Image (cartoon, rainbow, N blue to C red; front, side, top):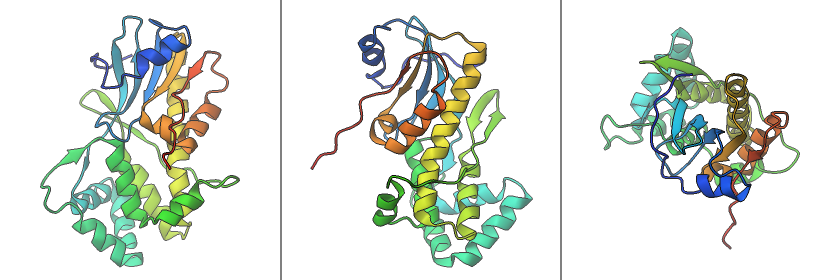
Length: 243
């Protein structure tokens, strides 16, 4: 395995979660997905408490026009798709292109920005998110692609956003696509952990971060994908809603 060993991120729930299940000091395959933190990744937690990220997230431009250019620049299909999106949704395209004009050439690997960009792409409303979480609904499979750059493996959020654009042009409802983002990320996390466990004999699987605590769709989808790993799969307690 390759990766850069770093101190544990600002995630105080990791060690208490392991200790709560009698696994303090245990090696664990780790998914850390956070909306608030600038860093999310999939990697390993060693018995000494050190963390090695193996898959991180590609930093994306925060200026909307630059983000659109980055999506268009993936390949020829990207260029055509962005042009088709602009033709189908001129108002959404203009809003996204104008976003963050005062920020300059800033890039962010935060999942908060990736999801925010997805919301802008879809033109999500509050009632869309309410419908997305209703029981009995199902999403579509979005592109979750990992690329290699400078010896690092990076989740390419440009392709997830391009996938959203493509389905939206095909008139898939906004609420279904909002649900699909979290289901696809849960599937991606579970698949990455299963692959990791073929090479590394961890004692447990740890899904940490505020997104696993606060997003039922992500948590349930990852849990379903990890049912057969034959190791304890640990999640934070669901976040309580404040009335």
